[in-house]
Length: 111
Image (tube, rainbow, N blue to C red; front, side, top):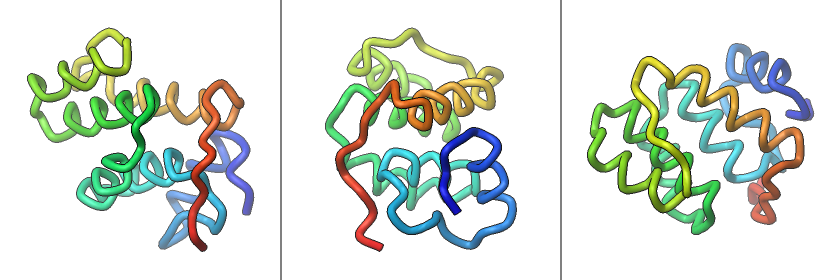
């Protein structure tokens, strides 16, 4: 399955045990976050030293409830802070930005 749309990502999260092979690392991190695999997602995002990686990192800390740490990562990403109530919409915004090509992710899964 190719994760080329928000609907495809949501379908994969609902039906698959792992992200499909060759999924970009940033999208893997979001996939895992949606699946409730916070620590695995955080481990992946730790290796993404880009504004997109910082944005995902901020999002994860919002999910965790560590809003002061999230604020730091939002600043690094050049983005406004989000509240926990905005987390679902923010996740969709990030996925759409990746599958829509707004953010390139040269790192691919080793799968």
